[in-house]
Every structure is written in structure tokens, then in C-alpha cells.
Image (cartoon, rainbow, N blue to C red; front, side, top):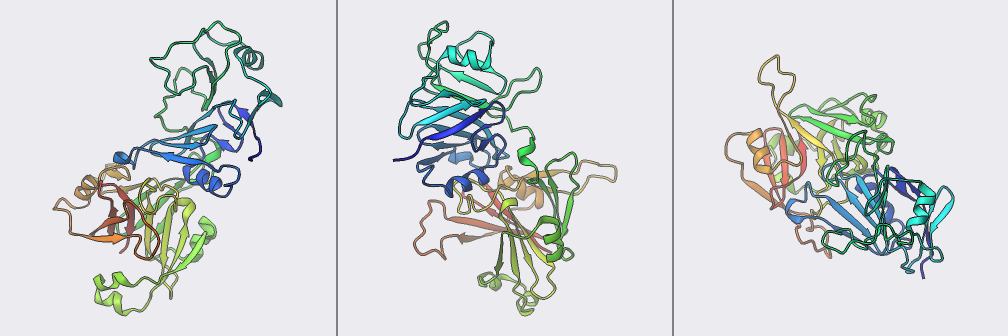
Amino acid sequence: MFSTLEADLRPGQGFGIFEIGTSLWNLLDTLRRNPHVYPQIDIKYDPDSSAITPIIVYIRPHIDLLFSRKQQRLHTICIRKLRDPHPPVTVQYNNIVLSSKDEVLRRVGVSRAFGPTYPGQELRYPGIWFSFDEDAIAEGMKAPHAGDRMQEVKRILISQIAPEGQVIDALDEVNENPVMAGDLARAVVKVHDGVTLYFYPTATSNPLHIRIGETTAQDLTLDLGPPLRVHYKEDERMTIHAAAKENQDGDTGYFYNYFQHGMDFLLSETTHVVKKILLHTNVPGSPLFQRYKRCNWEIEGKPEDDEDDTPPRKRFFDRFETISHFLSPREPPPSMLLDRTDDEEHLVLPNATTHLHGYDGIILEVTDLSQVVSVMLFK
């Protein structure tokens, strides 16, 4: 028997612990740590375009969460099955109970709590609307009687408040808000050099430059905080493909894992300087999904001339063939297979194998669907 789910409505902002703008990585981590509160969770996405698919997290039976395609941030919250007692849900607004196992939310109750609004099949207010249809897709269904004051509310939807004169679409990205403060907004890659990091709030945060061969472990700790994990490199299988000099230096190194930014840094064991940088795309269905937050990376090319202020770039959602041609106009190099389950005896994944394509200063990890799931930079 699960306890009652009690939460406050915050139009344009959230419902209980669920806040508009929260990253998919953070929210799923919260749910994973509270299985007794949220025991039934399903994740749905389009497997054919999983790099930029909208993601829906179903928390049975009451809450559906829609995440944006590129940023993977909470876009819309849907509260439904308000009368389902397994478990019961209590919805409050301004310390007033709107709906509970003993209180049925009706059209008249919404009007009393939120005031007048424009006529229609739903009651819409800035950042929140109330639907009298059971399902999310009401098209083709018989319309309820809009004038019935005793109509029972079936669903409550919360999303950002649209700017003046605009309408928010379900496929739009989430506008920057305070929930994102301190998160990584984007990472601009320069091959053979490193990466420039831009954080929220974008208007006031200074870019941070991480350079291969220059930035130290101490620099990373001062600028990014301590890593969530320090992992000493033990897998030497790739050394068979390395240059002789690299094989002989004996410096295996160690990783700083910043899962919350979607990044890893390989540091020298002797000089403690950054040797390699890894950026992760967090593609649903890929072997490393949810281990890292999505890093919104883009690879910057060379400007066409000295006066070009907008050098060409390719982004994480571009197909492998497009990025490959951007890095090298020739045919893509031969790939090596990487099976992420090799070290996990009892782990079975439907798409465990990826392909590693190496270029001058950069390696792309690619799925069978031509989606780049990670980028590794080196000199």
C-alpha cells in the first residue's frame, strides 16, 4: 500500500518535486533513488531518431512528463487519473485542496480558484490548463458540454508561460529559467585544442576553456568543482592500436568523471594535465543512456576567411555521415567495434555494440542508426 501523493500546483513552474526545465538526467536520478514513492516508471521515445526524439516519462498512474528533443529538459507536466486510488493523489493550489480521494475537481472549482478565462473546451490560464478529456489526444472524440459547471476535470497540464503574443508548442525547447542555473548550456569543440564550456545563466556566465596538454586536475577542480568520480584507467585493450611512443610512456592516467555535465577528462598520472576529453550525448537506447547528462556539444571548423565571425559547426544531433564529411571530405575511416557489455557478465542490451571512427585529433562513437553517442578529443 503506497501513501498518498500530495503536491502543490505552480502554474508555469511545476508540480511538487517536478520543475519545468529540470534535466532528464536529474529527474530520472531522483526517481531511481525513491522507488518506494514512484514504483512504476516507463520511458517512451522514437528509436529511429532517438538523438532528438521527445521523451515521455510515465510515472504510473498519475504523472506524465514530456522532455524536449534537444536539451532533454522537462517541458510539460500532465497530472491525470485524479480519482485513481492506487495510490491516491492530492492536488493543492495556494494551500487549498483542489482534488483528492474525497474532493472531485470540477469546472466550477477551477473557476473559483483561478478566476475567469476565455471560453473553450478546456480552461486555460497562463502556465496551466485543465482538460475534461480522459486521454491526451481528444481529436475525434465527442466533445463534452462546455457549459456544464459540474464537468469533472480529467487532466491538468503545466508548461512554461509563453512570452507575450506567442504560443508554446509541445516540440519547442524550454526557455532558459532559474532551474538551469549552474548547468552546462553548450560545449564548443576545437579539434587539437580542447573545449569551451558555456553555462547557465548564459547572459552572465563567463566561458570556460579546457585545453588538452595545458589544463590541470587542479584547474578542473577549481572551475568545475570536484568530480563525481575519480576512475583509474585499467582497460589497456586499446593500446594495441596506439603509437609505439604512447605504448612505452607507461602513463596510464586517471579519469575525472563529471556525469552531471556529460563529460570525462583523462589526466596524466605524472603531470596531472588533461590528455583527452570525452563528451556524451545521452541518446536513449544507447549503452550509456542515463549514466551521463546530455552534453550539448558542437564541433567548430575553420573560418572561411579572417573576417568570418561564424565558423561552421556540426552539432550532436547531426548524422554521423554529415559530421564525418565535415571532419574529412574523404571516405569515412574504417571503424572498430565496441561492445559495452563485454565487462558485464549478466548485462544484456538490445543495442550494446557501437562503432569507433578515428580522425586526426578526434574519435566518434556511433550507433548503427548513425547517431554519435560520444566524442573523444586528443592531440
